[in-house]
Length: 316
Image (cartoon, rainbow, N blue to C red; front, side):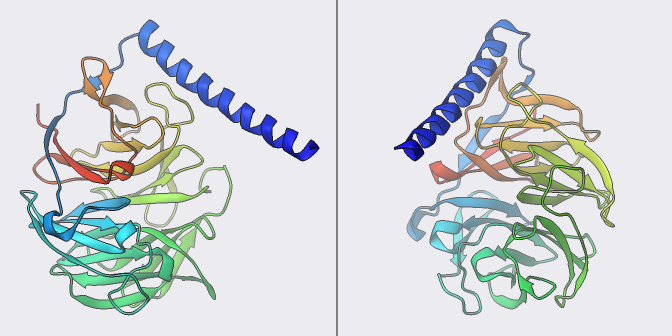
């Protein structure tokens, strides 16, 4: 009975904190200054059509001709053309070459598609048509680790991988050698608590979503900290449960918050700019996670629990 009382008290405390956070955000939205917003226009929702609906999608990336969506609940990657038409999908559940076990992150560069095959402790590499090329087992020393996301340097030589087993960033060569790593479990700068999405900036710096530390850390390629974006809170410019990040051509950071169901935008120096929305009202996303911005100024947002990928125009 005593143990149940403690559990009930803990649950009550969590509920009180959660309600307080929502009230803080609501009151500040009503009584405080208008929230800076930037209008977005919904262009389309990606529909796999005959391939069947998405199930718990987590990430999206684009190249010159394709859009690739990680469809984790179906253990596959679904491919669309740049107009949003379904093309094909690849992968089934399993551990053989070309199969997946709960994949999470994806990136496309130089006609190759890199998938963080988390449950199989590996990165799988495919050509642009979804044909398997090779896989790289992700190890930290001798221990297998679960990769969450991957980003590739512009020259294609280095693979930057976030992994939650040791809360670190691993930099690997194309042949799978561990070149360097940094990070550990903690709250200090350079440490992480569940690093998630990772993305390269135009100048080769790397932005990493540090989920439970409610921030984005930006590093130079050697691992030296360059910039911090966001801090804990529920007010405009603050983050409560960041999950995804995208960077546009001007170096602005788009950060999704899966708890507050919004996307916030920061300048290239880390300063808060606005929330995506209209007339002071944030756009109501549904559990936004992975994102990407293409060269047409279109923002792709994975809305996980809605099982959709929404495409918005960022043009004025």
